[in-house]
Image (cartoon, rainbow, N blue to C red; front, side, top):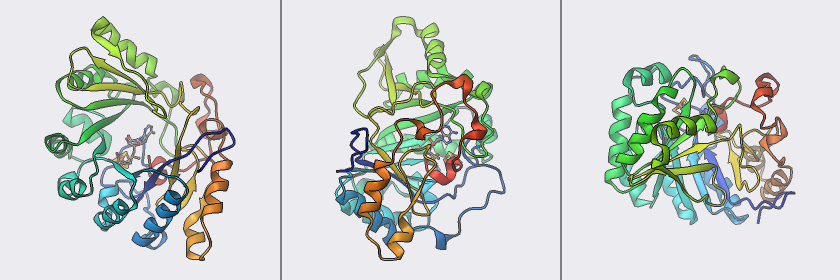
Length: 328
Ligand code: SAM
Ligand code: SF4
């Protein structure tokens, strides 16, 4: 078992398959002419599987594929097929622009839960946020996922002055369709032009909903290790939730670890340190001690880099990669 110095058991691995993407979300990707990592420096198919296998042997029971956009990788199907043989719950976070090409495979490997990122229900705002005109495709693909019976969560990063006016539209959608909307606080990463004024906190998001729905929303019990506070419109088909990573982080029972597309292990989204598992694998070294050690070094909260005190976060002092190179 992977247990850190604060007695937290780590059984959940998020693997980034690539830092490439077909969208250009400003809060994630540093700039339009961002250089993607060359393929030779990324984990190859068998390397992804070998490193994942080492984590499974150490106690991992759930793997989420992410990126960049995991489905732009040419060998994504091969990786999904091979990882499905590891006997873990396999899930994915995707922008859903290519999901229609993978539905059969996802069903064949029993991938039941899919997180889709969609920050707006407005086509023009989508184009502004992502620099690509793919709103209809994403909406259609969410429909296809629901038709096929996948459990769908929709992630929306809420930013003041950009999409905060759509909170109630998203909540209405969660009442009409069987999906879970997750409002995410805007987080600071290398090159993403984060400003405290752009953050809408979970309390502020809930206030908007409460002002409109009053007693028409109800809280749902928190599941262990969950990073969300979840609610439902009374009588609604789906749910909505707020992810308060910045203003009220859920680090106390965190069970997550991350593997970047170039094979570096991070014990936290905000960790400064990285452990080069791909290098070790290529040198023929054992991974298990490195993984154990990296978990043991995990900080109590937020990578040990800042406190959950929004007013005083100095984004420039945080040492980290850009979100697209970590894997969200
Ligand atoms: N391309 C896939 C997608 O967009 O779902 C997977 C990778 S993306 C980096 C994973 C998640 O990170 C997305 O839900 C995205 O909204 C979230 N994310 C990226 N940058 C963020 C930021 N600065 N603050 C909060 N969430 C962020
Ligand atoms: Fe691409 Fe996802 Fe980042 Fe948007 S959030 S740029 S879709 S990786």
